[in-house]
Image 1 (cartoon, rainbow over the protein chains, first blue to last red):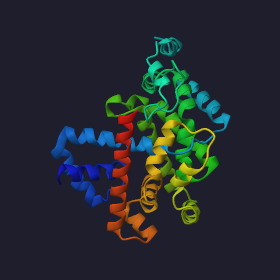
Image 2: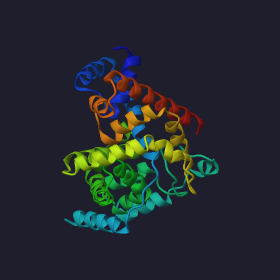
Image 3: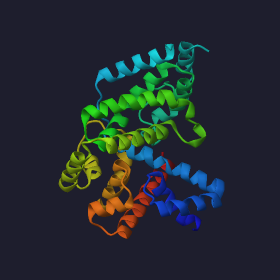
Length: 78
Length: 224
């Protein structure tokens, strides 16, 4: 696998779309390309942010935050 | 440093965002942040120091985006609200595992939320019903991203608008393949079976679509 192919596979990898046999090849290439590979995979995770930010934010009920913060404060006290 | 001191020191921190605020657009990964407010990274550091106020601020900033993501996966309002609460609790519990060297806080939160939502979906006994709903929605509205981006909205952030523009520029078949992979956690084979499309075609659609989005994002980053 050359680096261009690795880049293609990286974008599939970060969204979990690689098939098992592709994943095996991908991991081998990942080791081969080392830091360059890790840096590129890190950049590809920006896709996650992009997909989330492409959605129209949904409204949440106020009770959720109240319950969450009560749980967090209780957890902190224990 | 105590929790209240920690968060108040963040609030008092002199802002460097004045220049950004004058700009029409903001860096693509950052939704509107009040001028002088702490950055996501500052909030994460405060959460790592167990400051509940920091979690409260992070919740205010991102609950809408994360809930939209969860809803897109599980299509159920009540379950989405429960999951949203669980995810923020997990953010609190797992904050120590976050490392800024591996990415931005939002990316970490989205990855966590997506995984939880897809796991939740798979565990549901109502999975089959959700599938049926998705099937109907897919047939009636094959490219929801296009719908989102073309529908008039009173308030649409620059960030979201720009990203939606990139995504809506994709052919519907590529959007659908990416939608099923990202928001439903489907493998290429599952997408091929669901859409009655050859596996090789699904792979090509995913590769082309993701490359266009990735390249589009790089351009956006350059412009902003």
